[in-house]
Image (cartoon, rainbow over all chains, first blue to last red; front, side, top):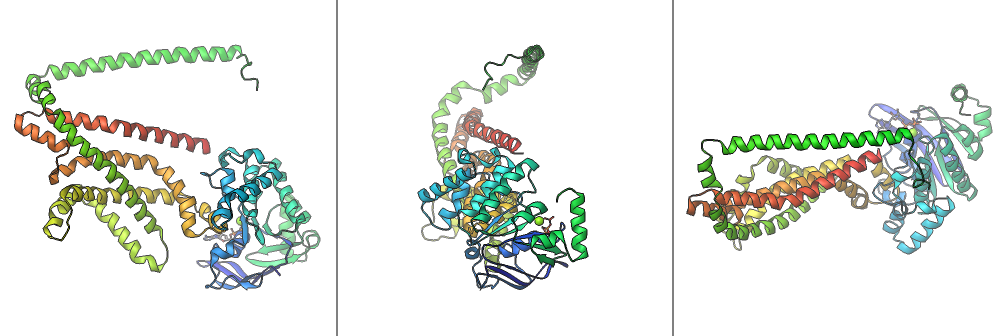
Amino acid sequence: MLLSCEHVRKTFGSAVVLDDLSLEVDEHQVVALIGASGSGKSTLLRCVNLLTDIDDGTIRLDGEDITDPRVNPDEVRQRIGMVFQSYNLFPHMTVLRNITLAPVRVHKRSAAETREQALQWLDRVGLADKADSYPDRLSGGQQQRVAIVRALVNSPRLLLLDEVTSALDPELVGEVLTMIRGLKDEGMTMVLATHEMGFARQVADRVVFLDGGRVLEAGPPEQVLGDPTEARTRQFLARIIEAGRL
Amino acid sequence: MSTELHQPSEIQRGRIAYRRRQTIRSVLLAALSTAVVGVLLMVAVTGAPGWDRVKQSFFSPEVAWRWLPQILEGLWLNVRLLVVCAGLALALGLLIATLRTLRGPVFFPVRALATGYTYTFRGLPLIIVIYLMAFGVPGLRLQGTPGVLVLGGAALVITYGAYLAEVFRAGIESVHPSQLAAARSLGLTYRQTMRHVVLPQAIRRVAPPLLNDTVALQKDVGLVSLAGPIDAVRAAQIGVAQDANYTPYIVAGVLFVLLALPLIGVTDWVTLRAARRQSAGA
Ligand SMILES: Nc1ncnc2c1ncn2[C@@H]1O[C@H](COP(=O)(O)OP(=O)(O)OP(=O)(O)O)[C@@H](O)[C@H]1O
Ligand SMILES: [Mg+2]
């Protein structure tokens, strides 16, 4: 098992955002987190990446308790890649520098080798000619693909994707989803929060439905999305269908 | 591709001609109103009953010529002092601002000291700091006390460091938290995040106000004359006392303005560029 969350609790003041949440992700598995806005999807991903402290429970990566206060969070994050809804590229750096920053500074790899690898990646996702552009000259879909490459060049064990397409125009969503599908075929382990039910059905091995910070239902996509057992899940999916997103 | 070949339509040609006529009109209007204001000012000043005496004691070419070399020599001191003090004050400001961002109980004393420093020296008048440094510190009779010039310069650095620290801090706080999250998620340490992600963006954003404070510093460098060193202001003061004529002050003033012009030009240019970038990025 690559990642396991055991009885995780997270509160903001008096609001309980994650409540006794448990979740397991095997190597090479793709898990889709679905659920209404505010159900805790982003918070869970941020907790796994140690961007915020949890209030109870344990999170393990490769069996190691990463929520132990003696663990160095920087070292843990080096093994986890994360991509955000709003891309969060560094605006003062070219695309190439955005990608090579962490490999060179954190992983202490040679600049030439990293550059070579970054250019190969950019070429693969059709952005070879953008290497020296600044992020504000790129479309949303291009920026998001750069952000994914930026996470991938560090060869993470686990990739966390937080609604990576929801800031994009419909015609740009496809190019990002194609890239993620390619990663799945290569065996990348991913946890992705998404509102794209069609995509979750295609790419996920398991779909996890979060409701009020708890896992209400989890299972293969056909079951959770096609034949949910819980009334809340059915309600949620009905609303999604109404909005034309399934 | 075909922009060179594109022939503007009738409508676009009409627009271009109209804009050109408008531009010519506004240039003519501006020239006319400038001339009118200029003549009125001229008449008001030179027609004033005391103009002849003012001209004598403030705008005497002979006096100006006699003291120009000394004032220039003094100005050279100002320039050197400005360069050194501006550099040190920027470094101090950046250091203090960075210290104030440190989190965790270990850094509490550091944070408290840095905060206390910025509060104190932004409130304390520069003249008092100069007096305290130039006359108070030597009074301690410590071994190896530096000269008044260094002490006066230190007063400038300490005071301006506090202002610049606040400017830097505003810049640091203007960098969106999502940038920090992105940097940390890549495994960058806090220090690497500050150095490669936060500070470069912060400094770019506050470059205009930083330069503006540097222009203010270049004027205040003249205040070290209070402590004794012969800078341009002090040289002018000597001239005024000897010739019983205020012209040397005017000479020093004009030189200060000339000295500031390039810096002001750079500031305006940087501000404009920053504004352009903002509107392009939005
Ligand atoms: N830093 C914070 N401080 C206080 N409350 C927060 C904070 N971050 C998140 N929350 C709250 O936690 C709850 C869960 O938020 P979260 O962002 O995890 O939801 P989400 O499932 O990702 O929603 P969405 O689909 O809209 O992205 C929300 O009620 C939110 O208001
Ligand atoms: Mg979210």
